[in-house]
Length: 321
Image 1 (tube, rainbow, N blue to C red):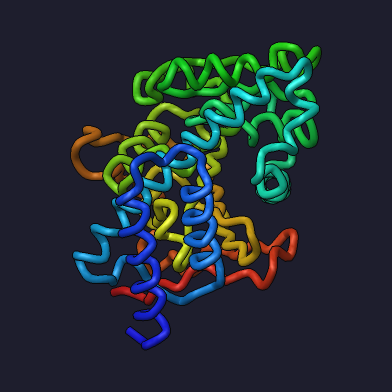
Image 2: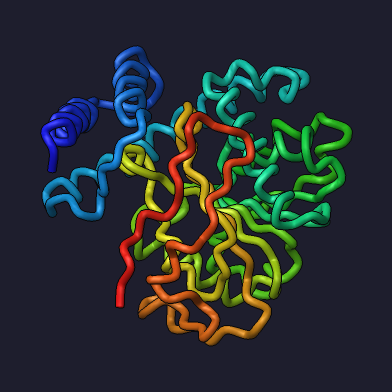
């Protein structure tokens, strides 16, 4: 590991120590300052490979991701409550401090989706929509203006807040549905969706993430699109990483790593047309004769639809025998 990477990890670990000692992760001056500094530290492109870090640093990374997820939940609850007090909440979304990021990320995901799925999807599912379902709202208002959105979240209070945001909108309220359930309990219903979005924080570690992906691979309709959010470089200290080579049951179409303030990487994959035999969720991932071998992962095309900074080309995976 180079000197620059060591300094970066030391700085991130220092933020972890400070954040983990906070009394609360709810929005406050100290919380906002620490997380803003952490994000600004992790954003610059960096070739660091987090899966090669020491066990101790890996443990800190997993704990930091969970802390980030908890803080993000508090932030969304806070602003969803504020927005819900407005007569027309969707007219005031710009009060959310990261609204512009969601506009860019949604535009990016829509552009990538349109490249690989030229039809207008009739029904879309968003798994892990939360109390402030900005991706669904932005897509519904700006890009997929006739599509029906089914938002899934395990937290009833999150869905209650989210419903309050859209209920007064004459168009969106008719096209939005909220389901309070664990997506692992949804089976045949997943076959209704042309596109499924999986939020970055659904599945906080590799095992949890793969359990959800394997479930989607088993029940999504053949040919349906899965949109995943991942992370690259130092940004993997903020969000979980999805390894495209582990998407058994799907054909990975493209992977995109922004280098601007849009933090999440985007992976788009298509459910195989053939039936896939699934393994139990607590065992190995799905196995399909059609899935590419690891050595083929380097052939997945990179996609740079919007020139988000200088895109990092995917995938930096060594050829394996």
